[in-house]
Length: 126
Image (cartoon, rainbow, N blue to C red):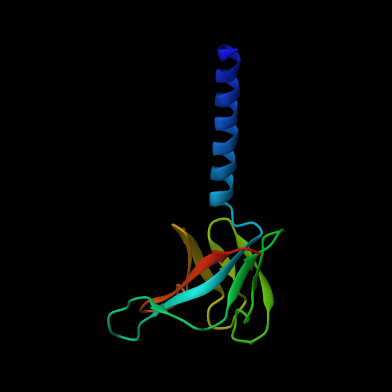
């Protein structure tokens, strides 16, 4: 009986660890709420809490939706993203933004900013 338990425990351990690693790296069908911004126009930059109600939602087929629009439209819009961390916003001033996972946060950056232009999002349940 003891010999039968060991393979079962090992199998379950492998199964569970595989599930956690797959969901940790995947953005597919996840929703993120803006919690802090870091914007500098010449001075030191640090994250400050925001009260702006804004969400980013990664969808199937490499689409990402932003509740307030990617180009300042103030309405929900969808654009495409790639697994390398690039969002193709199709905005006039900067056609791309980059994102990365930083622990429990998603950091969205505008690479065209000379100083800091970072937005920190925290994952929320759908």
